[in-house]
Each structure stands twice: as C-alpha cells, then as structure tokens.
Length: 493
Image 1 (tube, one colour):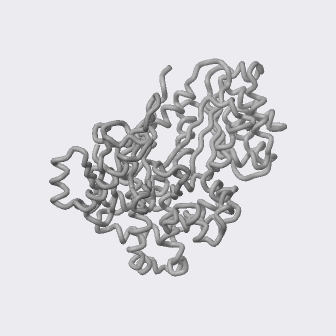
Image 2 (cartoon, rainbow, N blue to C red):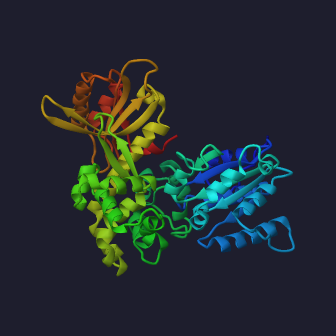
C-alpha cells in the first residue's frame, strides 16, 4: 500500500498526514469511518481538502443552514464530482449517506464532510443514520470502499461523537485530533531563530497556524528589537483579525452559552488562580457551582485540569490557548483604550502584567514540554511519562514548597513506588543561582523521606531565560544531578 506524499503547502503535520493517508489508501472491502477534530484555525480543512485532492476524493464543507438547504448543496457538489448533467436529488439524509457510500464501489474513495456539527444541528438523527449505513453486513457498506471522514471544530460535540452510548461508538477506524503546533514547530513556522523572541511570540499566539497567515498577513517580528512594535501593530490593532479572535473562540462554541461566566473563569485562571477554590473566590461563586462551567471549558479544549502529583486529590487548571491568556491578562482590562487605538500606551503599561501572567507561566509550560517530549532520556536518567507543576507540603514545619516541574517516570510493572525523575525551578525574568539550588536540594531531602515515591535518582532542574550565576554553572559541571536549561537549549535538537 503506497501512501500519498504530503503536499508542500502543508507545514509540519507529518504524523497527521501519514494517518490520514493510510486511512484513505486502505484497500480492504467495506466502507470505513474516521473522525478528525481540533480547535479552529489549526489547519484541519487544509489537511482534509489536500487529502481529497491528492487521492481523487470528494470534499464537502458544511455551513450553518437548514437540513433541506444542506441536502441541496450536497446534491449539487456530488453531481459536479460525479460528472452528472445536474445536481443529484437527495430525498433525505439516508439517501445522501448511501450516495456517498456509492462513490467507493470500484475503488477506495476519500469522502470528507467538514464542519459536520453544522449538519447535525439541523438533522439531529444524522449520527444514527450514519451508524445504520455502516452496519456490518449491509450491502451498501460491504460493497463500498468509501473512506468517510467527519471533521469538526466543536470539541465538546466531536468528543462525544464516539463516546459512551453515542450512535457511532465502535464504528470509527480513525480518531485523529489535530493539535496546535508545539513551541519548536511554531518557531520554525514563524521563521524565528532567536529562542527568547520565539518564547515571547509563542506566549501570545501559541501554535495556531492561521494566526501567522490570515490573521496578521504574514507579519512576523523581524528581530528582538521589533517585538514590541509587532505586538502593537499585529495583536493590539483593532484593524487586525487577531484583535478579536480570543472573544470569538468562546462565541463560536455552541456549548459556551453564558459568555460572561466563562470569560470570568478564564480571567481568574489567567490571574494565577489555578485551584477551583481560587477561581470561585475570584468570580464570587461557590466552588460547588463551578463544576459545570469548568467541565464545559475542559470539553471545549480551553482549560486543562492537571492533577498535582505530590498532593493526592488536588489539581490545578491552566488555559491551553496562549492567545486567551494574553487577552484576559492584557487586552480585556484595557479594551476601551485598545478600541480607541491606544495600543502602544496599553502595551507600555502592561509590561509587568505580561511578564508575570503571560510570559512566565508559558515559559514554565515550555520547559515542562521540553522535558516530556524533547529532552534526551539520559538527561533525567529515564523516560519522563508525566510533567506538571506540584506542591510539596512539609508537615513538620507546616510549610509548602511550590515546584514548577515535577517529572515522573513510567509506573513500575509490579508493586513499588513510582520513580520521580526530576524536580525543577523555572524563572523567565531572573537569573538563577546557588540559593535556588539549595532550595531544590532541601525539597529533595523531604521527598526522599516520602513514601510512595522513589526519589533516589531525582535530578534538580533549573531553567532560566536570564541564565545562571557562575557559582551555579560551576556546581552543575561537578554534579551530574543538576540540569541547567536556558532558552537556547529548549530549541536545540
């Protein structure tokens, strides 16, 4: 089975393309189903459109419309694809799905339905219709090699499409999430070679490809000295689409009905209130009242709940989309001034807020991603399976120690404690020195006495964008358990 070559216009996405190409090239008899999901602006449509083009397949982009109009549009596109003299007349969705299955009678044919949630809003029984159409043994399915791909950006809807007792559960042979580009791929996409500048840009726009192309018209900082001017002209400029994008991200998800509440929850997290109690106190609600909004934001892919590996039953929340963090911390409090085109003044006054609420937390997350995905396992004496922040409580002194990195290895096959591979201190705007190392050393001593964790080989990671003192650098040269990480190391291969 030869796979389709990835088109040059698709940046990165090698894994996603390989999975899609393998699914499309499957020669086995019988129609199959795949589901592709991901937040808007990640390049899903480009991936699927290029896949359909390269394989000679069929692509249909749904719009918000009545069921009758969508059937008519689908019939028109199907007629044009099949070379018919006119549109195909589709009586209902059962007939439409059978018509799509019929495309694969003689060869494997990729069939893409993009923005599938739009169709289901007007035809609630469509997933059940597809389930029936793909019933094993049904002639229309058995005689077809249609490779049907359903795509959508409403993550809560797409996540439930194959879950629990949903009609399509057990029918899909591919479930592919399209995530934002990681911080390294994002720097290559923006063509930024300066690691410090790459972190600054990523902390605002993250890894969403469309934010470079359509949303700022390929306007990227020309260098470190151009960063502040770029923020003002590309992000804080009411004439650029990126200016209102964070608001639209919430407005576009149909499950986020109470916009004011969800904005307040996100603002609380952006202010550093990572616990449910902290969020509740910030917005003036009871912690018990936040279960639903927090779950909805998680399902929408905007919030991530991370269990604290050192405190059982405790967890913290963080915003997954950097642009939303930037909006909540910098733009939302000064929205009127920004609409009056006073972006330069707002940006000048927001430097401390940007560094503490946006840049610092995102730098910590980048360091955790580096340790989890890019660092050589030899650096930590093993392969890291989980990396998050954590808090260690010392009952003897009644104090707690916040750690920016807690890296755990794989659980042991049998009984025994899980290996703790690294603990870390991460700072964006401060040079780290021996006092920071001493603090980590004291925390390690506490962990060595803690049951349930094997901290015998724990490494002490210190990461800083400002670098390290000579004394700390000398100590790291003499002690293998000390790991120093600057911005350049985060981006080196």
